[in-house]
Image (cartoon, rainbow, N blue to C red):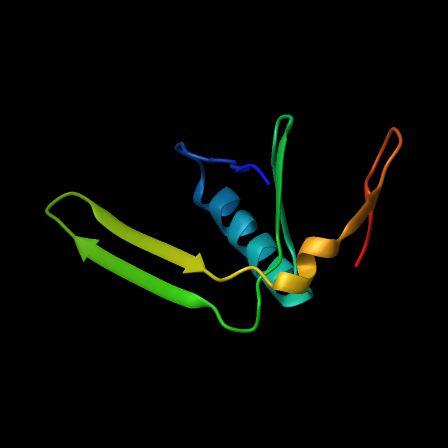
Length: 93
């Protein structure tokens, strides 16, 4: 399987950032996070054990918060069947 990647990088209103974070939390609670940017799409399915790193810093004129989450893929998830024609993909696990 190849590497799929979507990167969202830019300056935006705080309300938009909050909306992205709320969608991320909702996806984590539901068991899958779908991220799409243009034609690129990545679907993540976190396991029960997640590594979490939070780093915060303050400088004279800049504050920064970095959040990193990572997990191992569930081995049984590799047998996912995808059925698709033209339109949304239906996944059977």
